[in-house]
Amino acid sequence: MLKNYFKIAFRNIIRHKAYSLINISGLAIGMACSILIFLWVQNELSYDRFHANANQVYRITCNAGDFKAAVNPAGMPAGLKAEMPVIKNFVRLSHQSTNLFEVGDHKFEEKRVFYADSTFLEVFSFPFVKGNPKTALEQADAVLITEDMATKYFGKEDALGKQLRKDNGKNVIVTGILANIPSNSHLQFDFILPMSSIAQSDYDLRTNVWDNFNYYTYVQLDKNFIPTAVSLAGLNNQMNKIYKKHVNETELKVAFQLQPLTSIHLHSNLQVDLTGHGNVQYVNIFFIVSIFILVVACINFMNLATARSSRRAKEVGLRKVVGAGRKQLIGQFLGESLLISFFALLLAIGIVLLFLPVFNTISEKTLSIHFLDGKLMLGLLGIAAATGLISGSYPALFLSGFKPVKVLKGNMKSMGGNLLFRNALVVTQFIVSFVLLEGTVVVY
Image (cartoon, rainbow, N blue to C red; front, side):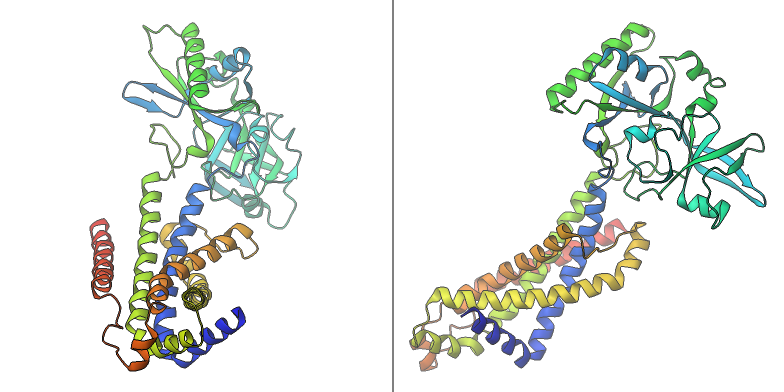
């Protein structure tokens, strides 16, 4: 029976080429726009989730009245770890630095440079290509570089163990090579230098100050810690009590909070923060827009299908005469809409692949479709199935409701679909389209 339904559906698609082309292309364009937006939304929501300990890592932020910042004192992390057993590890990062590096004739000013504690690769899981991640930042004259920087300075030569001249002064040794930093990381860098190299020259590090805010700190909590709102509030209170032991509240009144690593990109509106963060409001808005676009495409499908209802009336009448039930007819028409939807999905994927480079340029992303990604493929199939079922639901219910006696007698006056419902669909389609266009103009 299913085979017969799909055979009839395929024949109808082939027989009515113009109608099928309009329907499939309309759905495909709507799906393509939604898929592009979904890829962007998925990328925004995936920030920093590739780290093995992503759910245990938190950044310490501070709040001093109107001053809300992402930095804290150099001496604070070690003091917290000593008194809070739940903190298993921590890493401090300096502000982003600009340094001059050279090898032979290759001399460049690099702006994406950070100083970090030797625990950097223990807390974070940036893909390591060469070297020993456990010892890479232990020596003071070490440097970690990305694959792009290795190629930039050393070409095809193995960069591991080679020297780079830094700021026209001392040489540093490449002790590790990292894979290029994923675009969905809030930390973007090309060079990591050990904190020990400036430990004696930097006043904050040398004296372990608690009242000067110059470093980003990330703490890794125990795996058994359950991050509920109550438990995190308890840790925040504990941090604040420890801080007050070192700095008198009358001198400096500051409150500290733990910010989840996976929330930094979309939920940071802090001073002295790293650049390049997103905004969760944009994610929500674009997700809603993608839903609206699909709704418009589905309404277009419904209107076209019900407008052609008279052409299918005799088919429905004959099927009912020979014993077809309404459920069978609904299944047949939903099957047709699903088939059209999956054809539209194939065309939509082609459109996405064609326009993805342009979309990446506009969004400043490096989005891509990985056909071996099971979750992505299931998501795309889910979009096609949902679109097919939603867009085909009203036509299926309407067509299957034809009375065989009226149809076979030629009484087709009432076969155009519920006029009020169809008009409502058209009005809704125009309203949604107008809102999207007007919103685009306003934003521009």
